[in-house]
Image (cartoon, rainbow, N blue to C red; front, side):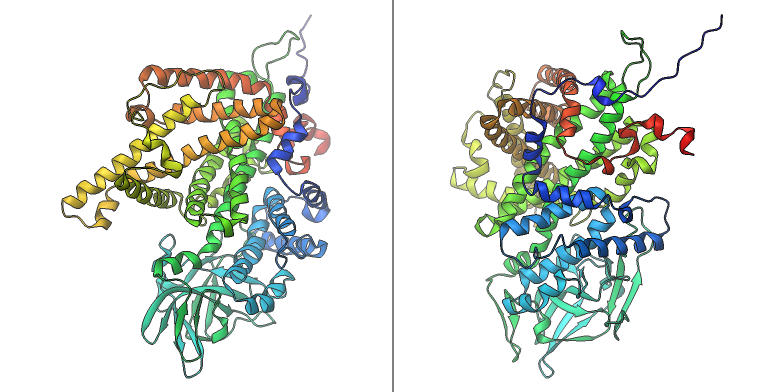
Length: 636
């Protein structure tokens, strides 16, 4: 008698998971924080046929579909009143809306975000009250479509070096916007190639031969019929590795004249007589204020990075619980691939990291919303560090999710591969990650040196007042005890700052300029920026989880598990902790063993954890569900 091998049948992920020990919907509220019903309405609208995801489109087709979808969302009125209102509850809907749209289509969220978030926010933050009243309602109702022209061919991260000129002509009382050379062409300007009729243009302001640095100006690019205006040349940036629905463009200005009141003048202005005035005392203060919109962009990127990680993890973990291979269970079935330790080591650390980073990103967003009452320097440190490490974490998470799903992870319809390419731009968008970490270390180092000179440390560096930070023994690690890990991360930052300060001083003592000394220490600077940000994650996550634990101990317990795995994995994968004697080789081995132990524990609650992310089913790939039925012949 011949043996017929029975075909494998689809078993839902729930069959390989246990009943959650915590309230999934309550944890979802902690992750989402606000406007939960509003988000549901946005997600429900995305079920309309016009929003069905399509793949393999040409560049022209992608842009056409984006315009149609933007028009439909505008028609539905989700953003009505969110730009012009000063009510924080209404403004929070703006954030919720864009988080939903980013989960659906990054091209659409970027195109709309450039118009509302960059173009609109520049007017809102840097325009006078009169300018805001005149222009912001037109931005909100899309009758004044705009873009944000800061980056140039020759200057991206070094914004101070942009070369576009804005010279004041007192006779005509106009500013003359000019592109003096090819490297001054505005580059990568989202919406410029086809969509935008207006732009906020950043240029070097010159009045009576004196350069006052970078300032923002409103410039009309096209007339009401969409024709490019005289003196302006616009070209398409062309096909990209992702985001092809966004019409990125290049812009040149040939002595384009604009009215004097088109300079956004909330903080700095030029009178009709040609007198420059500013509310700021120094050029550095002026520069920081002009780029305030970029801080908001970095906050958005931090949140977006964690959200894309959530989507990838939800797809990969659901697939890992339903896809079976090798071995045999007591029921005679092959083993779910998420039961293999190698698969757990691939997906559980990024799951833990995403949970903790999501909570930290929420706190960053809260601080940014209340920035009028915040320490702006500290907010810059947070936004720069969080943007860097969270976008890198997203990159690594999506890569692991792609590989963990094998060939299915490579299919466009399963979303992970598409997300990898379209969201890769976040690594350099609104600032190169390495440069941002160097900015973090520069800011923290200045506080370190100033407080060291005074002989007393305060704020986030107050732990340095302890005399045994470098030489004391590590606290005994007990389950759930954060002090063991906190001490390791404090040692790492203390070592990084002390080493950076020493190396800079040595080079300056050798007669090298401060620029050359800093340049030779950029590896140490990036490391110090990472060290500071990861210590922030330690302290901030502990504060947040303790508060949640007081409200619901079962949720606090699972988040504590995530925190432990996240931090132990950071130690385990970075040689710097061992190299700088933050822990011994025996302790390093202990940290590695803890990662394995915690991965096994987190696997038990992996499905309810990803369910708590609240990603609607129509934003997940087919492999998150019955992938056998989806690939059957009846669907050919």
